[in-house]
Image (cartoon, rainbow, N blue to C red):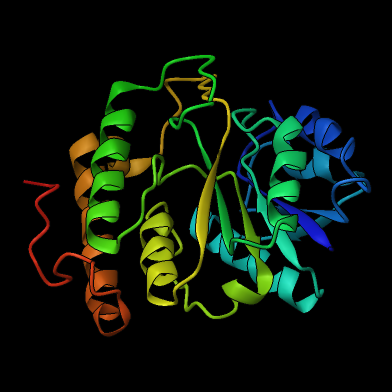
Length: 253
């Protein structure tokens, strides 16, 4: 099983070397290669990546988190990997959990294995900012209610994705609303989803999204709008137990 570790980065000069040093311990035993997607960093990140033993894909400008993930899936498909494990580069996703994702993938009973910071068995090393936890809980509830999932953490970026299954999706979201699109299309394409516990770590509670999304209400409405758009786009393929794809979103009310 060829597994790629894909790490989107943007201005991560404080963390990138430590993260890659820790990730390297799991290559080649648990992973075949590491891909770093530099989303137009303007700090020292490009210099720090220059001599690392990783595959590097660089955006000339900041194109967004979702775009970085989409490029990782496309690259993995072209290079004939079987699975892609995505993780962030801010030291909130522990590389030590990579073997757990690979072992879960090897069981063959899922297409997306999603990390959860809130399911039973997850350890909490720090508390999340209140607005992020509240938005996560509200949107996770909406996704479960309307798509028939039983997720406990809809926004964790630490995931393993079966490459063949990702090829069946039509992902075009470039920003932070990417999970809304992913979950709707996963339901529409009847992908098998399971969660495994990961640690809850927030090293920097003041870390921002940048721009208007730093306002929690703006962020919530943005996510709701993305969810509604995808529900309408895929309503003809969603499972019968999903609750009214065209119903107004009550999460933002």
